[in-house]
Image 1: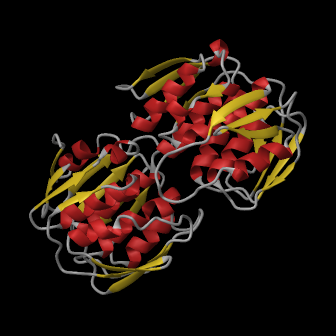
Image 2 (image 1 turned 60 degrees about the vertical axis):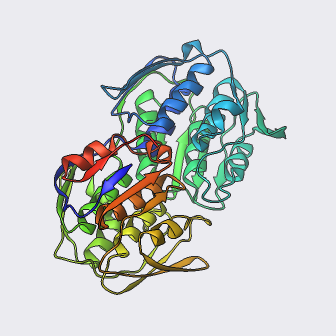
Length: 416
């Protein structure tokens, strides 16, 4: 991605459907008894990979990328295996484990890959499924789960893991009897998954709180469901507009989903306008340094840490950014330093001393959100910046350069 920095971003932008909601929602079609239609499905590399994985299992997949619509028919599934070749690039592949063992009594899923931002073990997924009666074995890099039929139970998560909450929730909807899931993650994406499952006929209550109750069903029907707007994409555009001293309105997003980020932007001097389905941001000049600590929802999201750090590199004063969710999530720091940022990492915290200006330079993306932070920094920097390895970006942002150009950015995708 080639960027010529210095332009002030102004205008409106429409966010796509949320990647982190779409992935488990599409997987939930395994549980359905009839075809399901999903709207506002973002055209991303992770979504395409997941569609390949579902098709490889025999599901009929019709993904209209231009219309952002996916029609999934689970009645043709003939395989309960997720091979390494398809799972290695994307952690979300592990979501098929719960639905497969719940519906078919068997699943063989390769251990997942994805961004290198920490260990992110799947032990919370596995212990949760074992509580519902699944027998779990690890063989040659695969998780093998067996069960005649899952049985409802109390599942208390050791940590409020988003992925584990979603995986066990999907398994519980076809388990016999009641399941009570405790210490659940509360992210909006979990609420969206519960909405989709309920549309199929699942009986769920309490999503969005730490306790979710599920009354298991013998089978589910079909559903029509529209994915929620991507709060991380919205936050990324808000940070970009703020950092460049601009005025940006982001449409297609529920402001409450992003409240922890909006509060920090306001602390940093931004003027925020919240409305039905939109968020507006205006800059009053250079950002003020603001400290941030990432936490599970409703705290400040770890997926916004890198983008907020990029805005703080040009802030007035010094900010401390503390990462408590993932280890290894400061890999963007050396790349931001190449643009002139003054950042010192001390264990789980990064001290960012704001500078008046950054200077363009060639940089390299190390993971999905790091790539977004480098683009924000490049938009603020004087002169040209080239961000390489943007395949990371394409895993989570749909047509990002086109949306930024519409706001006035000088940015283009070029051959490496």
